[in-house]
Image (cartoon, rainbow, N blue to C red; front, side, top):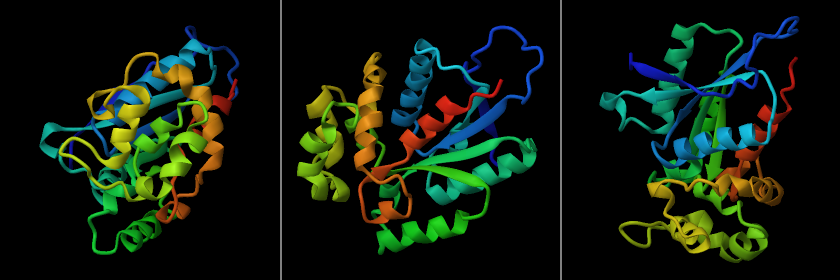
Amino acid sequence: MMAIRERVSLYNRYLKPRVGTVQPFRTYYLIMEGTNTEPSYFRLLERELLRRRVRNSIAIVYLERTARDRGSNTPRQLYGFLQAFRKEKNDPGGVYFMVFDRDSYKNHPDPKQSYLDFLKIIKGSGIRILVTSPCFEIWLLLHRKNAYGELVLPNERNLFRNKRISPAHTYISRLVVSAFGFNPKAGIPEGFLKNLDHAMEESKNLTSDPAEMAEKLGENISDFIREICSDLRY
């Protein structure tokens, strides 16, 4: 079995033990397809929620693949890793997530069907998914005010196809560079999450249903953020 390292976040909002707590901490375990853009974003997300003084009883644990398995990042491989980890961890109250792109299937003979087949495989497994269509950069684009009307809608077809347009960029990563001035593959700058409110509002224009993402642009990162912000267990 792959050795998975755990990296616990600082998402504990309480500096002292809480007397009379009704429910214990809930732990969210996340394994991600990407090794740079997504981890960078989630680290900044934690800091931003701390800055906003969001209070809850959540601990986030990032599951990092070892160097030996770093290249094993297909959704099916991530699912296998997470299943094995869940069995070994034996945390009945844990919530297990895998983060991946619908674009992961774009080189398959039938990308749409391969993606939908995977959704069927994991259905009922208890493992939850955070999906972006075509990829995580669609969620980054939403951090600009009026992003849907000005960036997404005029480019909807090209964004969904997300073809590679240069050795360094796909269509959407180039659009992120044009909109924000940074390459998401190289990291996300400090302060980017100050635009989180824009993203949460703009996300209402896209589907958050993973099945619908087979044919539409979408993301459910916003649903995850709403969930961790509303888990007000005292």
